[in-house]
Length: 233
Image (cartoon, rainbow, N blue to C red; front, side, top):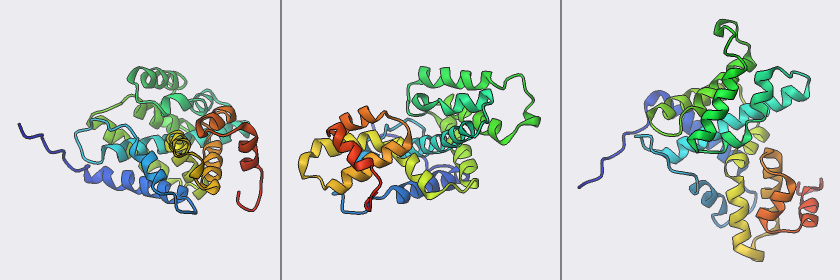
């Protein structure tokens, strides 16, 4: 039996989804030849059943977009904006990085609980951003995920995120796989690549530094040296 061909992404959502993927990829590109390590990390993304082509890129775009809004929530909290929806979004790291439906749905409900009694017509930017992430988290596959991802990416691109934040969102999405890929390649890996990878994952605020060192296969002292400000940082 011939496998059913997947349809292209709907035109309305293909633009923002693919644009965000390319923007994050360009922002996180290594400065020296990586022998395909960064691409291997991207290729390890889970291939979801969406009914459309570009399923991995759709998954990556959604996670990157949600992480970008998480970064905004973290910054807002640091500046004293500690509304319940902002705090909840700032601490949603695990769910954003997961494709387990139960994990995602639980956090989606937690996010919605922070504003469910408030009228959508009176939304602030922060509350709208939390609504978008909550809506995206309610899907882990299917065409609904494509729509929620497209809406999320379109909103994020309208915010014109900085190159640093775009790079951090790539590392938040793919960085753990990248660290493990570099560790598997052993000591032949260029030290500059390890440095870029660990700094990127550290900026993404998804792993503790102990876990970064462990997943990269380096000593904590070596990690600290890579994180010290310097000419290659």
